[in-house]
Image 1 (cartoon, helix red, strand yellow):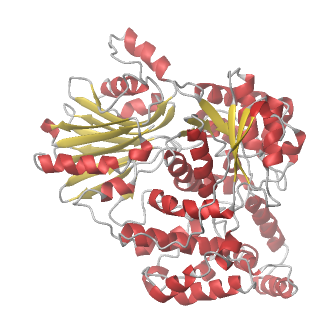
Image 2 (image 1 turned 30 degrees about the horizontal axis):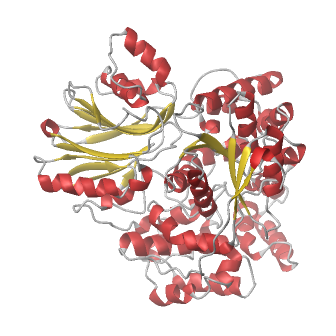
Image 3 (image 1 turned 180 degrees about the vertical axis):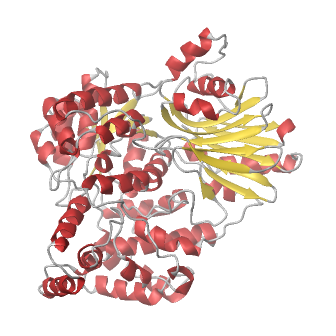
Length: 639
C-alpha cells in the first residue's frame, strides 16, 4: 500500500520539476512511511514518484520499478493472485529480482503491449501508473470495485496523476478551481462520483476503468474493462446459495491473509465484521487481532457484541473508548485527509481505531465494507420499498400529499424525514441512494442559481431491493465508502482489505436468488445463515445495524454551535444559499428537527473549501484534548 505521483511533461524535465514532484510525493507521507523515491524517465519527459508502506517483500519491493527495456511502474495496492501469475511468468522465461507483487504486476503488464489487456488477470485492489516507452503509452488503471483511487489533471505543463488530490495541488502548475455545478451531487451522495471531483480541473478515474495516455499526441481516452454482474453464469439455485457463498468468501479472505506484517480485523460488533473474524479463525490464522471503537455513554454502543464475538473466536481484542472530544480533536487531521470530500462522520472513529491498530503494531486490517450494498443491509432500502408500495395504493398525487400532511401534523413524520416522504411517497419518484437526505425540491433550496441548474440526479433503475443495491454498488461503494476507508486507514499508515468486495464474491452475490440476498424487511439472508453455520453469536446475527453513531446533533447544539455564526457571517462557499442553511441551523438548535446529517454536509464542505480552495486552516473550535486509554481485552475475555 503506497502513495504515487507521476507526470508526463510537454517538454524536457528540469531539476525544478523533479523538486516539485518530490514535494508533492511528501504530501503522501502518511500513505507510505517506509520509503520514498523519485525517478526521471528522460526519453518520455516523465517523472514517477513513490511513498511506500511495506506489506509484502519488505526488503526488495521498493518502487518505481523498471524492466530495463523501457517499462516503468508505480503501483498502490495489492495483487492477491501474484504468486499464481508469477508461476506462469517464470515458465515463460521471466527472471525475477524480488519477491514482490509489484514486480509480478510490472512483467504482467509488460508482456501485453500497452498493458490494458492484462487487467482481466488481476485479482486485487490497485491503482497504478504503467509507463511503456516503446509502446508510447502511459496506462493508468483502477481496480474493479474502486478500493483504491487515482486522480489526474491535464494542464499546460503536461499530464499528471496522484493517489490524492493534495499531491496534484502541491505541483506549482495546478491550482484549485471550485466546481460549483457539482454541489447538488455532493449534497445528495455526500461525495462527487468519478470522473468528477469538487475540483473542476482534477478528475478521478472511475472504478473498473483504465486511462491510456498517448505520449506522441498528448491525448487520452478512458475505457471500462469491468462492470459488476457482467458474467453470463446462471443464477445459483437457492438450495446451493449458502454453500457456494461460503466457499467464495473463504477464498476471498484466504487471499487477503497474505502479508509480511501483522494482520487483524476491524470488529464493530455487527454481522459483517464478525463473519470475517469467524472466517479468519476457520482458515487457521494463527493470531487474530481485532480492533473496535466503544461509546461508553451511548445507548448504541456495540462493544458488548464485539467482545462476545472476540470471546467466541478467541481474538486478541483492542478497544478505543471514545469521547466526543476525541473526535473533535481529530477534526483538523480529518480535514487534511479529506481532500476529495466525503461527508461521512463515521470516518472519525475509523481514523481513531486505525491509529490504535498502528500503535499496536498491526499494519493490515480486514474490513466488512460492501456487504450492506450487496445484501440489502440499509434500513433506507426497506423504507423506500414500503413507501413506494403504499404510494401505489393511493391513486393520485394530490391524495398522497393530503395523507402525508395529515401524518405530518400528528408528528408521525419527523421534520427531517418529510423531504424523503415527499419524494418517495407523494411524488413516487425513484430512489436516489442511501446517502440521499433531500428530494429535488428541498435540495434546490440549498443553492443559489449558480448551482441550482445542476439538480438532475441519478436514480435507481427500478423499485426492487436489487435495483436499490445496484445504484449504491455503482455510486456509494467506489466514491463514498471506499474513499472514506482509504483516507481513514491510510491516514494512520495502515492498509484495509475488503473481502466482501472481491470481484468474484460480488459476481456470485449478484447471481444469488433474491430470497438469498434480501427480502423486504429482511436483509442479508445468506450472511445470517452462514453466520449460524460458523457459530457467530446469535445476538450479533439478529442485531439491527447501527454502525458508528457520533453525537453530531449534540455537537451542533454544543461545542460547534458558535462556529455556525462564523459560517453564516462569512458566506464563503459560492452556490450555497445561506438563508436556507440559517433556517436549518435555527430549526436544529431550537429542537424543531434533527438536521445534523445535512448540516454535517454543510460543515464538511465549509471545512474543505477553506482548506483546499482558500488555502487556510479551517477554524474548528476544539475542546481541551482528552486522553483516551486504549484497552486490550486479551484472548477475547469479557471485561
